[in-house]
Image (cartoon, rainbow, N blue to C red; front, side, top):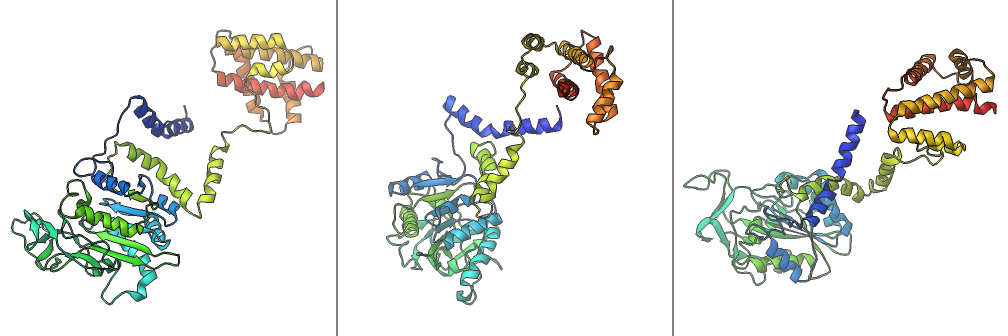
Length: 463
């Protein structure tokens, strides 16, 4: 088996892997378990199943993205995109998608800790700065960024300063809607928003004055060092982004995704705070779906979601890009065209079918018998003997002469190579002279069509 066949078989097998997962899970009644952090399908302490259930109870449809962020563009801005605890950087096309979603009037919730996605936000900040760059206050750089490190608050915490409790709230561009009825928000190893980003300047939840972001978390006696953020710091911010459409885009950033998980859900007013964010982002409209982006989480390579993400992400990305979507069907058509039958020519399925079309029933039956038995050498011998008889009868030769056959064939087909012609004839005569020789069916077909071509040019053209 050659390289081409190996690649084709490998691609065929791989293309059916997702279907195999689905069929196998259905047949054996296998229930998936979602143990990774911040998954809306994870029912353990580190999952977001309570958050998902609360959103669904409020009337919203909840979906997850396992493949490509570009899927959100299909909602044309009529959805809330939730990016929770990302561990992977956003690709450039992902940044484009978030930017276009916001500018279409879409809503986004980003909850990150330790500044994991800061490098990704750099690109988003550049694009959004082009929209409101002239309106940015002095000293403000970008729209959203996180300070990194772990937030410690000596004046407001539970058990440890690493578990701060936020009790200071302010109305931002949400006009106090997100913090309405919220008195305490419990955090767990959180970070903070940078006070120099626009969402930090429009912060709606703040630490006390004796707080800082500790970069050396293993230090037994932590203390604010030079270069570490300290003082009153924002942990959540909300911003409305003006667009050319009927509604503004909205963006909420929170510096601790843990406050949304099942372990922290019932602590203080965390649940109220989380649902206030959803209500503000959706304007209280239950018809607006909430879409969680889970392909940026730490999905195990052994999970079905990982395989589906690999297989479908590129296809979904191409079909959701305005410039590439019209090309996708053409690319698919070109890719499979070589495997489609040629409609201009009748397809020859077997040797015997050719002779059946000519009415030679007995000869065809013998060919079919030998092919069924796998005696392909006997088939070659029968066809070659018939070819010799037909040529001698047509040209009234007393003996069959290969050299004369070559001269006539070369006159009819000047492109025919002499060395190839005589080498093939020698192989046919070798097979015909050894009744016990074993040959493959593909060689039989090649030799058959070679002799069929000779018959068409030398015998049938004379009739």
